[in-house]
Each structure stands twice: as structure tokens, then as C-alpha cells.
Amino acid sequence: MLVVADGMGGHAGGAMAAEQVVATARQVFSAYSPKSDSAEEVLRNIVNEAHTVIKLTSFTSEADPHSTFVGLIMHADRACWAHCGDSRLYHFRAGQLARRSVDHSYIEYLIKQGYAKEEERKTHPKRNLLMTSLGGDTQPEITYGESAPLENNDVFLLCSDGLWAYFKDAEMAKLVTEYDPKRAAEFFIDLGRARARGGGDNLSLAMVRVTVVEKKPEPKFAPIIPRRTPGASS
Picture 1: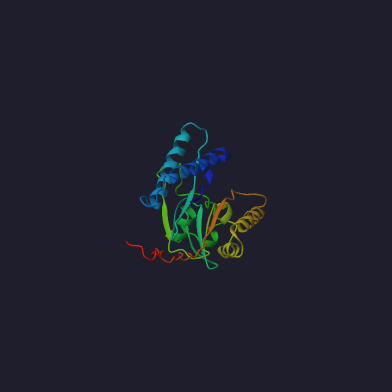
Picture 2 (picture 1 turned 90 degrees about the horizontal axis):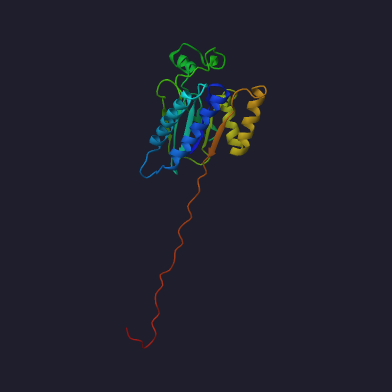
């Protein structure tokens, strides 16, 4: 499982909310049994339980903590994911963007309804306003997705808006295709910080590349036939 949580509500409140999301994810996932549980149910439980914890924390804190969530559960033949807020999941295949999550943001709503243009995504005065989040006044909205079957060299990238805001889809696809995940992540962080002029927003990411391993044929053994001693009776 991969998880990215981008906290909001001031430095202390945001960090606290994000840490609680990750801790909840680790706890819920540790009890996950693929044979009896669905990945969608696990992801839903993570979001709802983390939301409750963050809400309870806000009652005893001066901060107003909130957090986004994007999580991915990998199986041998498929990948299941869910998100809430504007932290994104990207699925790259054969050097191209195959799919990405759709933000739960006000600017996304305006673009979808035709009230704003795509090029306004990074300049609109309310571009950072979220329609839903963990720790908000209402129950979080969750969007689910699944990619199946998986193919060799499929790449899944989970990241905060502090990263995707500074990269075009084609540039991201190029980086994850030409470099291994560790090196690609280093490029994302270094270039993202440079474009944010010294840091900017939270640049967080998690990435995984699928490698298909061919099964080796089972060794074949000749049956062992006991030898009979001449003259012996059975």
C-alpha cells in the first residue's frame, strides 16, 4: 500500500492531520486480508477512521486540522485506489498518461461546469479551495478507481498538489519512463522545489513501478521405481 496525505490548518495542525492519516492507514492495512476483505472497503475505512480521529483532535487543539488522502493497494493482477481532496494518483503506461484522479476542488468543479478554463487552474483566486477533505464539517467524499490488468513497467505516482502543480503530464510521463522510481523521485523533488522558488508548498510523493516476473517451470522428476532383487518374493 502507498499513501500520501497533505495536511492543512497551519504548520502544526496540517502536520498532525497528515501523520494521523498515515498512522490510521498503517493500522487498518495491517489487518487487511485479500481473501476476505475488499480493497475498496479498506480504503474507505482508512478515510473514515482518519476523519474521525482528526475531528476529535480538533476539539482539543487550537489548530483546525484537515488533510487530503490518496491511497493505492497493489495486488498481483490489479491496483485499487481511492482519493479525497486534491492529492492525485497518476497511472502511466508505455510512456503515456493512462489515467489520473480528478480533484475534489472548487476550480475542478468550475472547469467541469464550463465556468472556468483549464489554463485558469493555476491562477484562479480560489484554486486551492477544496470541496471535501478529512477533518471537515461533513463526511469526506471518496472517489475509487481500479487499474486491471497490470502490465510490465506500469508506474503509479501518488503526489500532493505541491508537486503536480509544477509539472505537465507529458513531462511526468517522460521522467517516470526514463528513470527508475528512486531517480525519478529525486528529479521531481529537485525540479519542483526550483520551480516553487525555494520550496513552496508541500512536495510529497510515493511511486511504484510494476515488474512482471515470469514464473519458472516446475522441475520435473522421474518417478522412483523400487528395484527388485532377483529371487526375492513379494
